[in-house]
Picture 1 (cartoon, one colour):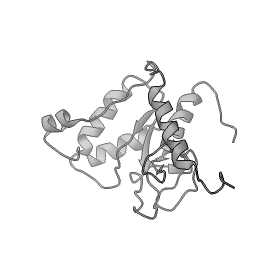
Picture 2: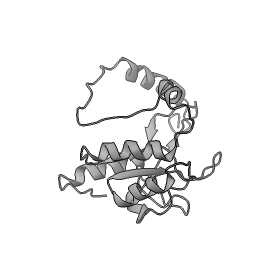
Picture 3: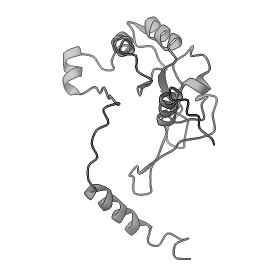
Picture 4: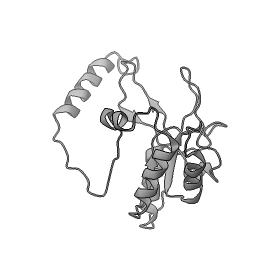
Length: 174
């Protein structure tokens, strides 16, 4: 009964947080590349949010290196010119790029994937997170029922992992 009513939950979560902080840092995986945008980049480009042209140029440059998958963790449901048509063309032609969408919840509205992507249920990943009662995000959803605004059942991370493993002929068994 004590466990069912969560009497010790806050204590357990604090212990989990401490254990995660003191564990040894694992080495970076050389197969992964994360391209981030920081304050210096924004000052150099002098624009927020980044235009579709800037994002498209980055994606085209990354595609040249023949990656197995590219995750675009930036919402692009609304055009940010210049370069919107070119970005949509790149997203439509290259299925190794996984853009994001977001399901609606009690506090935020839905965000659709970029328009015109064929088979978004297979090519888009949702970027929803679950916040614990203390406001900290400790876990990630892998699957969720698709909605009209976000037509995929797979999370962003799962879609990227599936694309990566597809080259190894590894298929998930749910």
